[in-house]
Image (cartoon, rainbow, N blue to C red; front, side):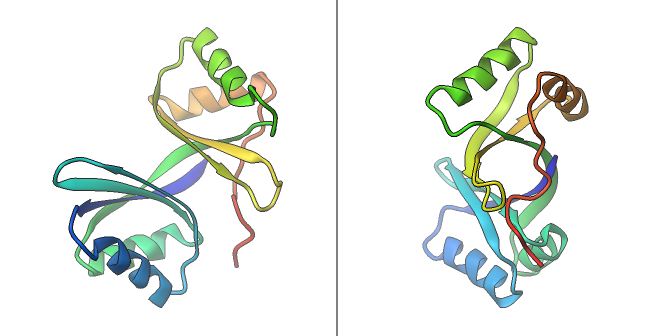
Length: 141
C-alpha cells in the first residue's frame, strides 16, 4: 500500500497553481496527479514525496485535504494487463471505489492505484494471486 494525498478544492481559476506552488515551496515532489471535478468542487489525488508535510502545507494554504492508504499494484506493460487484474478482482467479488494508473520510475512498470473497501484483505488476496505491491512510485529523498 501507499499513502495518497486527497485535496478538495473549489473549481476556481488559479487554485491548481496555488496547490502546486505550495508543494514546490516546500520542496515536495508530485509523482502522480489526477483530478476529478464536479460543478463547484474537485478532488485532486496525488502521490507525493512526503504526504505528511504536503498535507500540513496544503492545509496552511487553506485547502481541505487528507492522507489515505490506497493499493498500489504493479501490472505488466502489455495490452490487456489491466483487464486481467480487473478480472481477478471481479472473480474475487471485490468492488473498486476508484482506480487510476500511473508509472513507476523505479520499476519502469505501470502501477494500478486503487481504493477498495477492505484494503488489507484485498492486498492479501492480490498477493496470493501473484501481484506485486508497490511501496514507492519514485525514488525520493
